[in-house]
Image (cartoon, rainbow, N blue to C red; front, side, top):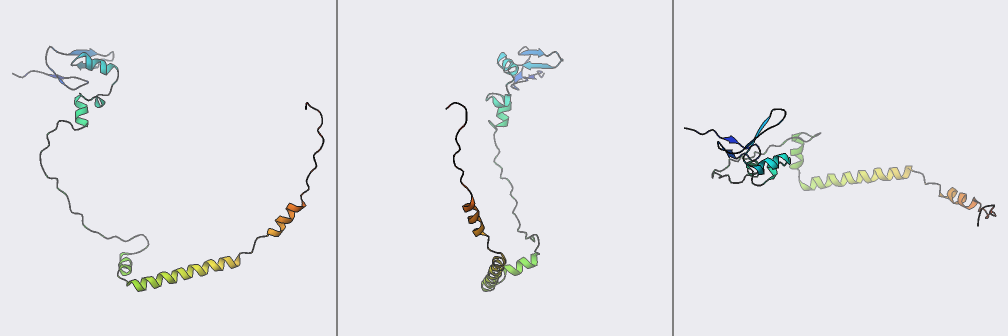
Length: 153
């Protein structure tokens, strides 16, 4: 013969016949609690996942579970080369297999081209007009202090 057991709504402990308290809310939902400690915690709106002695907490934090010693299977990752945006895989492999001297020569050539381009920009720019600004400053008149009129002193 099997005994019908209920679960506590808060702690999820087994409740045997003749034990626990049953609370029925106005909307008709039934809650069964194993003891007043669970009942009060439920009414205080405590989260059973945050209370150490509840089943939900123990499940969440993996407490008291006996682990079987089984090795997890790990897949070996296979190398796969993809092309990067704008360049194909063939171009990437060609650059990878180039000799360092050739690569160094290409880099220096690119640097020279960039420097020449920068020089060209500097030559086209005209120097600013600093002379006019200095003249404007000299022309400003300094007002003499006018006598105060009215009010308390």
